[in-house]
Image 1 (cartoon, helix red, strand yellow):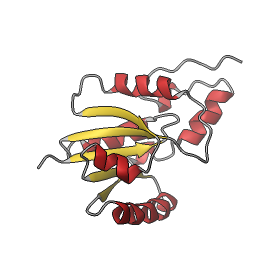
Image 2 (cartoon, rainbow, N blue to C red):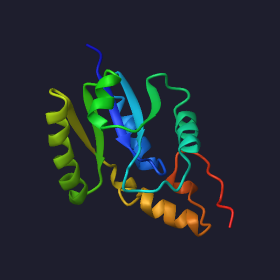
Image 3 (tube, rainbow, N blue to C red):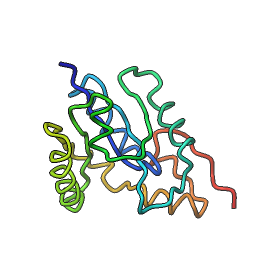
Image 4 (spheres, one colour):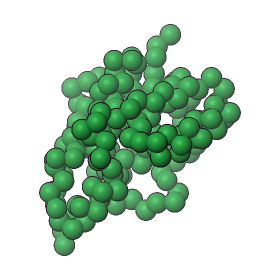
Length: 155
């Protein structure tokens, strides 16, 4: 059976920490589908189409990585794409508390859907999409945090 992992997130933006989880996940899975989900409690900073294009570009040389966007329950979308695993990165214990609860609910929604947690590489743990958005919104260069080049905001 092919081991397919679904890596969900709002990825607003997709950081080097996210890329690290995908790259390390490829040692465990045959295929990883990066799912850019709609978070009903957040307004996107970076346009969905732009982030999709940039993430696809970052993995253009690896046919084992796909990028999709969705607006439904993560567990259902993972199953629709043939994934039997959810892949999640953990930076700290706060992430674990949040992700642990979600993983239990996802298993109730789709029986047999397992969540695999990878601990973020120590040098990338301080990076968060929230911090990158804040820096970018004030015109700061955020290239050191991203696996692709991003234009400065037009202020």
